[in-house]
Image (cartoon, helix red, strand yellow):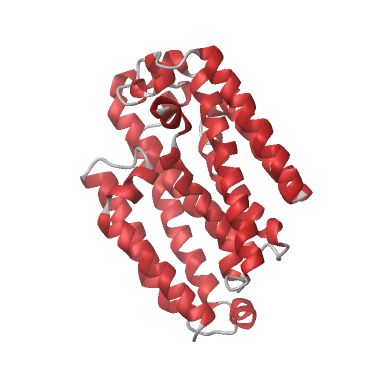
Length: 289
């Protein structure tokens, strides 16, 4: 059972908390029915994303066995047979999509789109330079949109822009870590890595870093957002975003981190505390002040 749970990669479920963005910023956090619906959607998305990870591990089993970190995954180590993994992938996929259709047909359609995107990503798109990271970033946008659709609220353009920029920032940071970690063997693990270089990735990271901070600042200062949320104080959350971005850059360049954004989130106390303080400040501003 422990091996099966490890195969599901539950630590990656942290990414799916993006589904709650629509609930929080639509000021529906006090609506119990919508909260419960979002929690159910979160659980189903976790199961679906685990099925996607299993598929990815099945397809990449040979290359993962040559990777210094991914070789410890259960499928790569041979702790779970390929046939067992396939059965688990199918069961999780059908279960999550089936119950999501009962929860909301449109939500189920978005989850199906997420599955199709990741299927093409695992089979081909992960080998295409830049597109590989953009696909990962699109996955975060799909999560945010799914959360909004699930509770029937408007999908904010600001939500989409800020989400995709932040996801690109994390994605290029991850590619840089992989390139530095694997060095000369990078292209043996993934073809697209041979097209990257630390300098090129640093340029990409610089672009999305500045874009993320500017986009979030414009969001907090937007008259449209002020009118929608009924508050003029969202700009007070900018320092948390700045610190989070700078701290992540510090971990990438000085601590050789970035390989797993979720692991860094869970293990780096300054980033974790910063996110919690940002979330608390947002809730206080949106719901109280």
